[in-house]
Image (cartoon, rainbow, N blue to C red):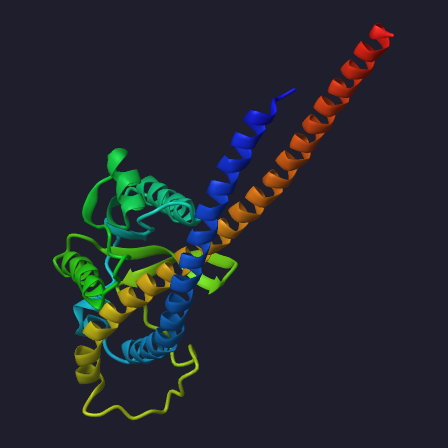
Amino acid sequence: MPNLRMIRRRINAVNNIQQVTRAMKMIAASRMRKAQENILVARPYVRRLETLLRHIASRIPQGSHPLLDVRPVKKALLIVVAGDRGLCRGFNANAIRRTVERYTELKAQGVECSLIAVGRKSYEFFGKRGFPIAASHTGIFQHLNFLDAQEIASEATKLFLAGDVDLVEIVYNEFKSVIQQVVVLERFLPVDPIGPEGGDMPCHYLYEPSLEAIWSSVVGKFVNLEIWRVLLESNAAEQSARMTAMEEATKSAEEMTKRLIGIRNQVRQTNITTELTEIVGAANALD
């Protein structure tokens, strides 16, 4: 049976861990609230702009803009968005796993594939395993900035326009709620047009000065905003996952402390009983 000193040390160690996890939970909760506010504001605007552009794209000739150019896919680019840190349940692992699955699918189809790794965890995973990485962005989630989204969008767009890749897809965690994050694989380039029946925008709008002029002036903003939305989604999902993970860790530490206190009390009781038995035995021996 363990001695009291060892049990006390374990209780102190668990209490120290509990203090850390509780503090991390509070920090993650604060960051999550801010990240949640940001994505709930940005998401409707970007989605509406996306609907507008796709309706325009469905009404202009396919070859009228290079970002609409659908080519046979010989080379593909995957933008994988993960986090810079761990302790967030399966947040990083899920995005990485889906990327590996898609990478394997494309390779099986004879498609040459490369990656843009966003987040230290994705860069470390794919870099150590020899995956072809076209670009990487680490540490951006500490102080998320729209310029980071512009840089990522610019890298992907340049590769597509130069003909170095024929398809660009994004893998990221979409924020659904505090307790739910869903891994999403989306096509980024070429822009996917929808027909007049798609979406919720009436098809009888008049566009001035012309559809082509509106498309050319807005599509660059949309590409940047779409990456920005993805980064906001991923950030909100990461903070939510970390807050939930730290809450579970804090509860586990509390339960472990209770069990250790129970064991400590048992050991105390056993020691006291043993000492009393020895005292009584010694007294009887003297009689």
